[in-house]
Length: 381
Image (cartoon, rainbow, N blue to C red):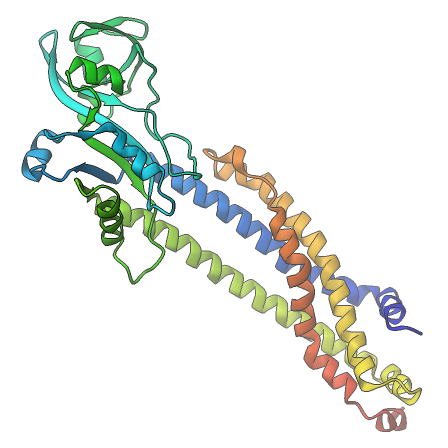
């Protein structure tokens, strides 16, 4: 009788024991898939929440006096507006969500406001991202809460800025910050209003965290900036950047800790089941050895059975883990709920990792079965 037939006969004859093995693999794969898929959703959710805190990098002209910059909130010097494309077109850059802006304080109807021209956001090729900042169309503007309240403005009204009429597209909710005194407009139109064609005074960006813990991410960013645009310098909001990194590392460590425990328990479960199976089949193993089956064939029977059950458990575990995540995750991660989907790459991983995991757990019991003395076993019988 060939080995595959022996394996399937064994599974059929001892279906209860085979079911417990499948359940062990199912638990390992299912929990891994559930935690991994939920972890990806949590990472996206955290990224969105932390992203909404704002940009953590400000790239300004190198000649800027930082004392003046922090006092008035923007650089008085300017740089060419097309410099932002130098970042977007360079592969491997550590910046994302690049936004060119031109800011200056002006007076509108007796009120001091911060006029901010915003260009359409760009990301390094080919890593396109959903925009972080307001997307403003030409001829329109967004006004801060205090500006709208003081000037009695609402959506659809017209606001005249330096002789140019802009339609109010949105009145920004109260932020409790400088944002409440801003008027956002399309960058090109603001450049015309301020008579600064083609100029900007800041590029806002979001840092892509450096993965090498031995490197200071700000040093990496400044080195990249010097290579791309020596006329500028970068300021990092370190507390915001560190908060993002700590949140990411915490999630990775938590996932590794949980899965280590799950895999250890499942490995012990599988090993005990394999040992019990060897003990129950001592007589059968003695008969097979007496009939001429080689020790390697006996070992292959146990390892092969473990691998077959591992494949079955992997498929069912992936389905169960995915179903669990799709049912529970949307209520936990409401901002990015629509992006939660089955991770089919995990199925491909499970189809080779689960049978390998099962086989490793069955190696010692298989070795014990293969080294049994058939004469001793049959004498005992």
